[in-house]
Image 1 (tube, rainbow, N blue to C red):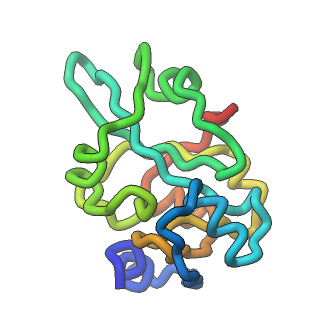
Image 2: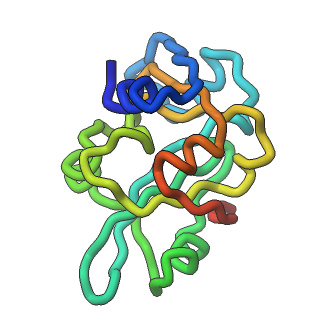
Length: 158
């Protein structure tokens, strides 16, 4: 059990867990999940952590975008109301989320971060995000993910 799965179970959120054998040499964790699980690419989302300045303080935020797209740092900054964002360091990601890169889930993180989910998620019945471990995905509704993470939905990719 990961913190993400534990949270979903505790909150009685309808979900399913999908497992696959992770290849350490995989170039893209998200696309690996698409391939190994036979999922529609547009339904699989990656969880990215960015750093930005919030009222003169450094802060982190989570971006959840389709694996077939790239995060637009410019669009993410606009949603966060800041001038610019940058990808957070691996150490900062691990410290704030409790997850390793490639297995970062938007759910069950150590610290609750501002979360923005790409608006395309709302068009899908189910989306797939990391369950908190490489080789483990969770399927749930975008509305449930949004509610659990107190997220806003916006166009944040290119």
